[in-house]
Length: 296
Image (tube, rainbow, N blue to C red; front, side, top):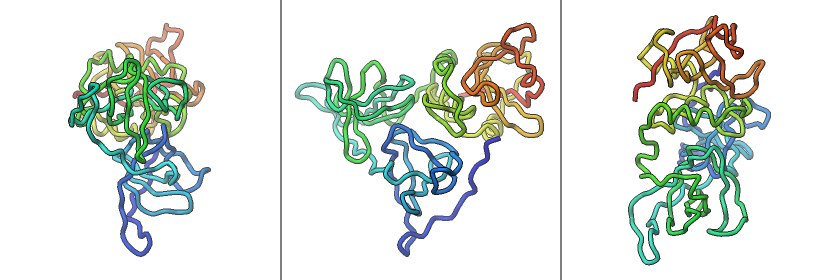
């Protein structure tokens, strides 16, 4: 079962209480329990995720995210991108705050509007301020640290910054879930490089316009709408555990569910509650804790 780091007081840095908001400056940053690369990976933060920074320890900075806290390498943080005018024509700009929201599981950041020089990768759900939408194939975006890059237009959607994740049908959410089939299981993971069970359902529901907590037990407690197995339908979250909640999956229909599974699978897989199905898992069938419906 995932456990959350204990909450801490604002940290004393150079003799004063210092809390500064920065942004994650890499495609995906590890957030660890302690300022040590061998410490537990408690979660990950995607590019441009806001992070309230406090105490530093060597090459590490303690950060508080909207749903977690831990230690990130200081080099992976930078000043938030400056939002300015968005270029929409050769001689036309608009002050509207627009964002390019990544809708592909993973895509490249390019140095120029054309060419193949890459600056790194960016992952599903990252929202980056839009700077230029006049090019046919790519969009220019602002990055933390006063940098810029270009992303493939086909890999992103232009949206308002204040509403980057509009409400979408359940099929849209499960389609995103299916795109992760075979992705490695990673405790604390939140991206296509590796993901855990609760990070997986949180990410898919974020893309569908619903913001739910990070950990499975938090998700269970935050969702008041319980359903029976007979009522289970697409999009419902299935919580598993014998003595406490230890796992979560997402229903694809009234029998099948998709989940980022450790143990025997170590990847995102689909299982069934139908004993006659080849992908039936008896152990999970016997430890269903609850089924909850996410109501936007």
